[in-house]
Length: 484
Image 1 (cartoon, rainbow, N blue to C red):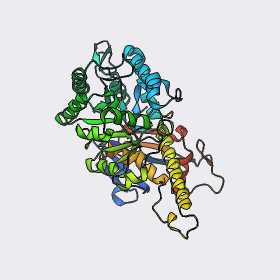
Image 2 (image 1 turned 60 degrees about the vertical axis):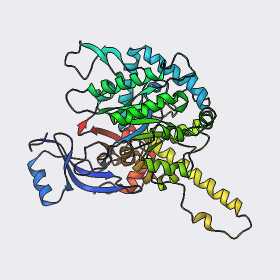
Image 3 (image 1 turned 135 degrees about the horizontal axis):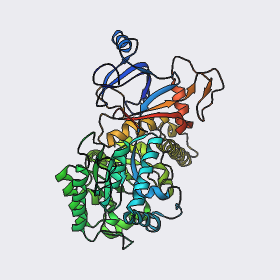
Image 4 (image 1 turned 30 degrees about the vertical axis):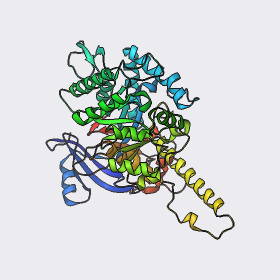
């Protein structure tokens, strides 16, 4: 706490953020100050007269010259119960994989609250380690269990019903949008809700309980209506969830056009595509995040933009379970809000940095394929326009925007994801170079002249983007509060 009343956080150094797609802005030698609620109240060059006076009169931490603050990452798609078998069981097509691995794991956690608490606590810890400050989570079909509260009661012996996943995220300080699964259809008969009416009642109960969890203090969690996807939800359930979302003004998450077998199942059973199903029942609207969307064409992407529905792009899990890559460039050009998701355990890495790198790699493969197809089509003709068209590849700068500001906007966190006055400090401190020892930190090596002592360069940020890991992350804050 500085000597100025009501100030909670003050730092001088280099700030990095992405205010718009493809733009990385480096604010060198800036002063950033928050109020006691973690909101930025002052942001200006440290050499300005007012900043100089402030620094003289208050306790201000100075970042090392080889370090910078950057917004925390947003993960738009993560199955919390599947974290327990992360990195295994990726050998089957989607629909078979769900039955053999996903449903089984989720059902097991519903039956073992002790294990659920252990898994979700570790998940929250791992998210902090990899720089994720906000996450959109799928839970299980169960709403509640009985256990000792850790964050919401002064009397730790007091027993009551609560929501373990939401508790874990709130306790460790991660912004979390938590969804109780709604599904009245399942290939695993023991893992489904009894009826559409029961599922709707459970969803309403979850929304109410989640809203009541934080009586005092900063609320970091919100409930999300979560139809797993069309194959696990009857039309009656989908209609009821659409009405519930409108009535309670609650966000929605699901899976859309994820794989060939899923899309075919919906078409065979409902006789329309799943995007039509979601739209029909009011589940394709502002506040909705749909994961994957790999089988959407350009008109469908335009529909998402018109409905203000966001996409959770999960490039790694798409490689495993989708027969097509997501048309990322086309979605961005259509005005669709897009962020990144890890899709654990369909993706084996919980680190959004991995997601950024895979997003760029997949997009470059798409562009290479496009060029080769165009060359083949134009064989024997004098055509050069194949390289004149807008590239399908994205840059590392664009992916960094998707991981920060883009994801925040998709979650409705309109003040998060960039560093500016009136925004909360959701930030991570990254160290790339140790000037005292004259060496890069972690996996980063610098063999030429050392970086300028004046601060961080764009090349240093890019090097961290490509090769950085948890060793470079030396601090995490959400709403101005430092996380452990």
